[in-house]
Amino acid sequence: MKSMTQREVTDQDNLTWTCVQAYAGLNDKAADKATELAETDEGKVTVVCTPSGQAQTVRLEVPVNWLSNLSDKELVQQIQQARK
Image 1 (cartoon, helix red, strand yellow):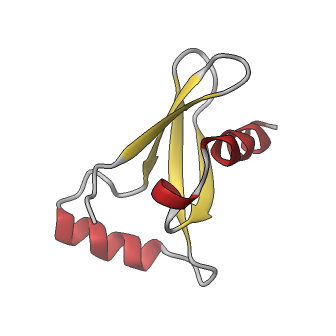
Image 2 (cartoon, one colour):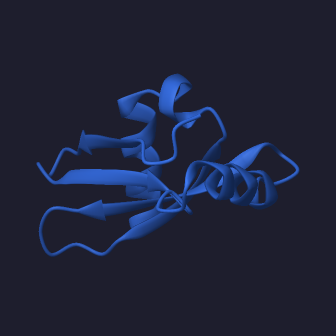
């Protein structure tokens, strides 16, 4: 698992959000261990999404396989819910 993987999605307000898993800045071994420790009992991890613009950064709890299995639409929906 690579630690600096991120995703970008654009919402209906045309804001581009860059989402990165918490602890992504650590080296591979430390990031993997931190991710393992941060994973909830439900198999979720914390992801921080930062917008391009003036909107507030949001923190999401998403499935551990969010990079490959969470669609852009689902990610945008979670961002919108977190902003409310």
